[in-house]
Every structure is written in structure tokens, then in C-alpha cells.
Image (tube, rainbow, N blue to C red):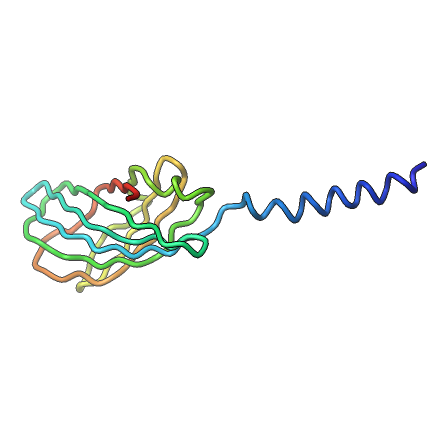
Length: 143
């Protein structure tokens, strides 16, 4: 009796292991151009592309900053979005993780997380003239 059940159990376990990666989290590649202007409270927006599981998804981004800031800048950011279970998890409101968001010598990086648990880790060069260019939060909408 046990000899007949054992192959069936092994086959079921093998099927579960083959299907599981389809539901696993995947990492996406993100590219975004962000234009910002600030005088104490800053705001900005831009657009970008998320490459996720071989497909390109365009998005719109808007953001804000608080603190002592003045000027304008254009930032080209590139990096990863991890913790995505489905592409719609990427959209949402992102807030800073840790002490990120500092910009020095025209290059900077930021780590942000949204309400779906997606972690953005972005870095890249900035052009323009701006004092205290810290990002406070982002909202991403898929197009």
C-alpha cells in the first residue's frame, strides 16, 4: 500500500516546487527622470520605465521635499524595485527608508518603500542648481 502512495506524494511535491517560482517575488529594473523646483517646500514630477519579468511598464512619478531648499534640478535615477509580487504592487506612495536621499557632488541615492512592501533603491546624477535636495516622498502611478 505504501509503495503506491509514495510515488504519488513525490509527484505532488515536484509539481508544487515547479509552480512556486511563478508566485515568488521578482526584482524589476527602474529608470526615471525627475524634475524638481524648490523654495523651502519643493515639488516635482517625471516619468520612467519599470522593466519587470521581461515587460516594460511606463509610469508617472510625483514627489515632494521639506526643509531648507531652494533651486531647481533634473535627476536621472536608475536602480531596482524588489519585493514585487505583481506589477500593480509597484504603484503607490513611497517614503524614505533610513537616511537616504542625500545628494553630494551631483550624485546621490535613495531607498524608499511603498505600502505594498516594494523597495526602490535608486541612484544617479543630478543636473541643476539646488541647495538641500532631499526627497521626502514619491507617488508612482502606472500608465
